[in-house]
Image (cartoon, rainbow, N blue to C red; front, side, top):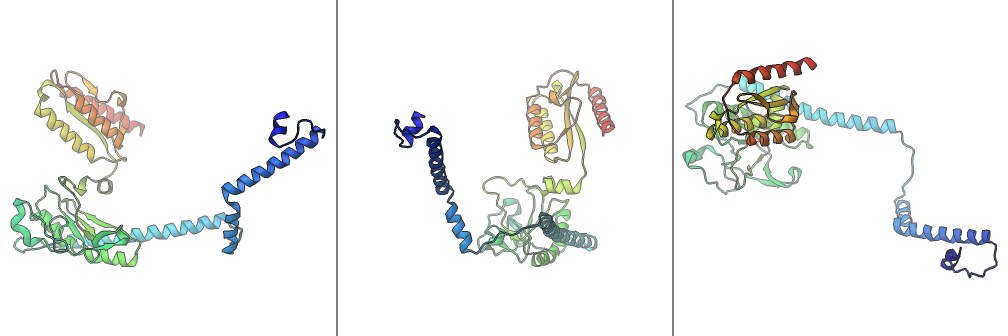
Length: 340
C-alpha cells in the first residue's frame, strides 16, 4: 500500500478507507494505460483516416469470397494451360511436317552469339566462320519482364556449348521451332499477365520468348534444358534408381574420378519425384550412406548433396565382385516395389 500511495501522490497518512483509495488508483492507472495505448497504436489517427475515406464496416460472406477467389485462380490457370496447349499443338504439327534440307542456309536469333543493339559478340574460334547465322537483335527495357532488355517481336535460341548448331538434329529443331514465334506472340497478346514462354527440345535446343541476351557472365555456359527440373519432370515419370559403384582397387585414380562424375551427372537429372540409392561393391556390398540402408530415398537437393559427399569419400580397395552388387540391387528394388 505504501508503494502505490507514493506512486499516485497519496499522502501516507491519508485517512480515506483502503477500498476507496485502491479504487482511485485503479481508475488513474486505467487512464494512463489507455493514453499509452492510444499513443502507441495511433488509434485516433487511424479512425480519422477511415472517416475521411468514408470507410464502412460491412458484413461479408466468407464462402462467397472463397468461391470468387477460386473462380479467379481457375480462370488464371486455365489461360496458362491454354497457352501451353497451343504451343504443344503447334510444335507437334511443325515437327511432323518439317523437311530438313542440308543444302539450305539458315539463320536465327541466338541468345549467346547475336549482336544486341549494335553491339557485337566475340565468337569462339570454332564457330567464327558462322557469323552470318546469327541475326542481330534489338532490345528495349520492359517493366513487365522485370525491367530486363527484351524483344517481344520474336524469340531467341539457346544452344548448349557441347551442341553444334549446324548439326542435322540441332539445325532441324532450330528451323521448325521458329514457327512457334507466332504462337508465343498470340499467347502474350491474349493474356498480358503471361510471362516467359519456353520450348525445350530433346536435342538440347531451347527457344525462349521474349528474346533476350543470355547472361552467363564470366562463367562457362554449361546450361542444358534437358537436365533442368521442369524438362525432366515433363519428359519422364517417377523413377526408382539404384546406382552401383565399383569401389575395388582397380578404381584408383582417374577411374574413380570418371565414375564419380558420371554419378554426379545422373543425380543432377533427378527431381523430388524420384527415389534413389547408391551401393558400392568390392569384396562386399555397402550402402554409400549407411543411414539410407535397405531403402530408396527421395532425390531432394539435400539428399543428393549427401550422396555426392559420400561418393567422394570412398577409398577404392580390394577385389571386385559385381555379382554381389547386382544381387543386392535387385533385392532392394524388389522390396521397394512390394511395399508400394
